[in-house]
Amino acid sequence: MAEYRRALAEYLQARASYAASSDAYWRMIGEKRRLRASKRANHEPISLEDYALTQPPVYSGPPKPHDPSKPHEEAPPAPAVYVPVVADFLAAAQREFKFVPRMPQNESEFKRAYAAAALTAGLTREQVVRIYGFEAGGNGDYEVQAGLENNKRARAITTALGYNQLLATNSVEIVAEKGNQFIKDLTARAVQLPDGERTTLASKIPVIRKMVNFSISVPDDWNQHQLLANTPKGLGIHAMNLDLDVGPLLQTQKLLDSIVFARRKGYDQMLTAAELEMMNLTGDGNGFDMITMPRDWRDKVPTANFFQRSGYYDNPVAQRNNVVGKLIAATDARMDQEVRKPGARELAAALR
Image 1 (cartoon, rainbow, N blue to C red):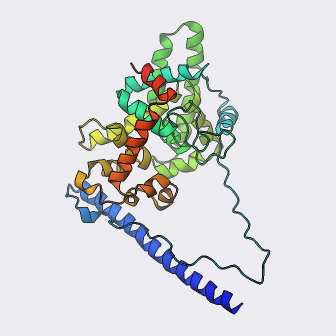
Image 2: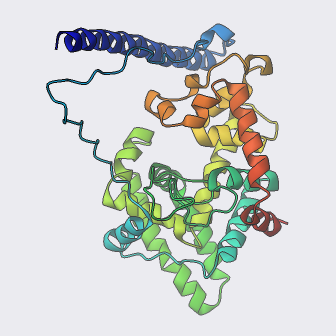
Image 3: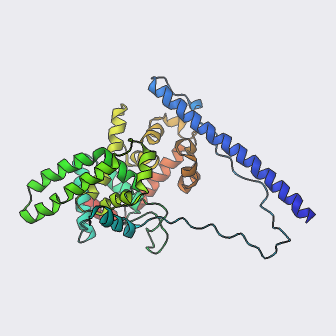
């Protein structure tokens, strides 16, 4: 027991030291991010020293010792946090909005609708296909969800859904900001359809209006939208990604918003698929920060600068490719691989 108490004391001291250094590191990340935002707002130049240039601390102390007085006691596994899945989104849409999405008859039908929405939004073929390859694994179907790409019986890891993997929070935010535009677009489209199809499409307008009213019931803020996304109504809104008429609009709008953000900031070059994916992956502000830094900084600036603490540790790709240059190169390499798969080739054909 004396040896155990000594080992436990060493372990607790090492963990406390690691926790203190980790807290200090992530405070620095936040402070430097705020500093860069302030400089940009004041049109001041950003320097390399305005980023954290060291990697996050890694625990390297001793493992937690086993208590010899409890030889058969094992720590109970942490309960898995349930992540809602497609069945939950559909049930919520029916229960909260009395709405059932119009599902495609086959995958090709959704790809054609997605391609049409993407081209109308001004996205390039390269952007659409390569981001689909990266986000949906090159062969994902329209209801592919994070964690379930290769095994429908596995556990979902987030609510990320569809060809470019919108989170439920993304869906709520886009409906809040662009829902009224969707209503105008769908109304104009309905006028041109035969009677039966017109009635089906027009029936979605009041549903979307209810979703808009719910989504704008809080300030236009990511954290506020996240709270709404975790409610039954928020999950119901997320089901719109599965609708043949609205889903492609929702998903391509997410990519278009990033392009518009970059243009508004004065970035007039065509974003490569990997650059657009950085904005899709880390948020527009962080992604824009990454892609506009001088290229000779990219191999010096850790990816931790562009994530929240929890998001960084939930992203093994950003940890393995732990500087900006490596992350962008790894994203491009993954895209090169995935666009060869049948789903990506089919989407590419729909974009011609």
